[in-house]
Figure (cartoon, rainbow, N blue to C red):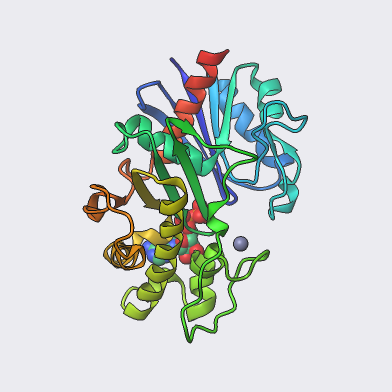
Length: 291
Ligand code: ADP
Ligand code: ZN
């Protein structure tokens, strides 16, 4: 199978050619400009490579309801040139092949369950903490869409006593994304996360807020594994701190073998940061199969 994979992000578009086993033969990155500039470049790249199907993991919010007139569109994104952009329609027309489409984070979750450490699991979450916070949910063996798709990066969390930072989310200010994403770290501490490595108070507060969101996810979705990726999670010291606060906040209420072994429950991605693009390959494979 010759599959195309596209990880569509707000700053860059990662394009790859691969197969149903997760092998990647070729990969390029194209900057995200406006749809008028970027979409034709992407289509040309895939057209020249004769893909049988294309899988797209896309930044959002997006419309995933196949009954909807705007299925396959990016809907209300803060990246204004992309508002109401018909991504699936564009590639269908340009390539004439089946197109698989889901959120970027659902794509990463799918990559991990198809090719990575979560292979034997039916319920996991993949959370990215980067420029924003996004969460993909794989529940009972399926990517969860529900009414639209989860936007669990915007869950509301409790402010730590004495913390006066207002929060960076344009919609909610101090939701999880507003308190923990890279831009929030930079606004709060006056430096980029990567330059704050040696400031333990930064990562303690960060972990405290991330842990609250994870506890909310554990309570509502009951995942068997939580995978934390994205630029901010490159600060590996966060993992033990997050596990510590999760344990504290759960307060012994839930008892499972997974929660007894948090080191294997709250984990880093397992596919060398290829989980998104490999998940997009699987979205493409599924679209071909369903065709
Ligand atoms: P995106 O979310 O745009 O796809 P990333 O996941 O790389 O991209 O996230 C970028 C954000 O993560 C930026 O705000 C950046 O400051 C932050 N970041 C990237 N690398 C690190 C790092 N090593 N430590 C802390 N923060 C980082
Ligand atoms: Zn928000």
